[in-house]
Length: 148
Image 1 (cartoon, rainbow, N blue to C red):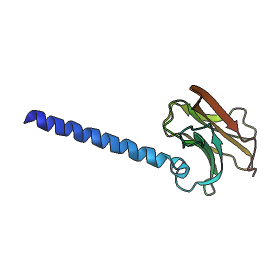
Image 2: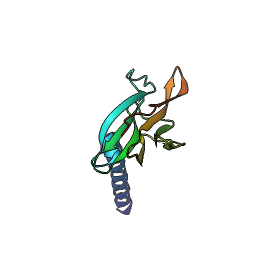
Image 3: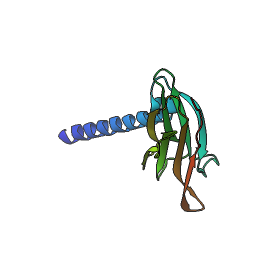
Image 4: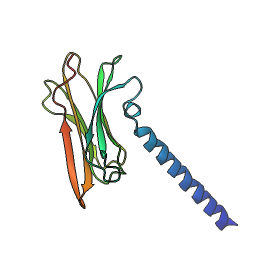
């Protein structure tokens, strides 16, 4: 009886962990959810190539929150589960270095947030993707845009 109780408890814990991971991954698939309440998408750019659909492996987003004045960059994995690096980056005009978040993420990189009142911003992202049996890196930056 104790073995059965342990097995049920272990199975229940595994199901709880799996459900929790699925829920957070689903929530992360939305750039507004990743950046937070009050943000809206200004633009996006496709990155990499996902062989399963012929579409992008990831998509870099620039979002803005008018009430706080903050910009947000996030790169969402939209192809198959990523097995490599994903990066989101953002800077304001006059900043020498882009603020970035890069790692081995399955669903998204970021959010990266900055306040850039009266200045242009530059956002970008990158992702690993697989093509012809080997790994490739696709990175992109917008250049300075959305000034003001």
